Image (tube, rainbow, N blue to C red; front, side, top):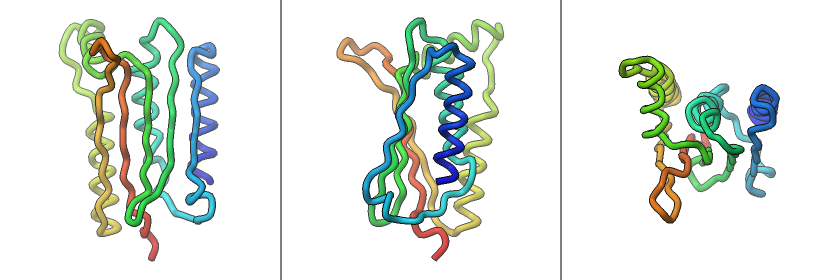
Amino acid sequence: EDEIEFLENYLLLEKNRLGNKLSYEINISNELLEDDLMLPPMIIQPFVENSIIHGISNLSSNGKIIINFAIDESYLIIDIIDNGIGRKKAEILKQQRKGKIHSSKAQSIIDLRMHMFSELYKLIFSYDIFDLFDINKSANGTKVILKIPNNLYE
């Protein structure tokens, strides 16, 4: 509940900052409403922030982020889906603005955090990032799938 409340507050602030150019949706599966799962703090927000900064803020139209929470036998599965410009175009824009290839520290921080949680809990925390495309094979956003062990505190 705390993490979802934090995400909603963060997204509302970003929506106000972008002049309502951003909409968002948070979906929680019914199974999760019955469980009381623990989630390490600030594990989702960096991915949402990347979606906004690199994908949605560069759109000429309105952007949307969808965050889905689901669970299976082993993992809490969190999908973060945006309809931004896509990673390839975002990287090109970053290079044009900087005049050189920009090395993002956010990704290395996320990787370090996931590794630290895996070591701390002796469980596997993971994520995958997928580029999304429309029927014309044009970039149409990004999807991140986070897998967090659902038995952290057993």
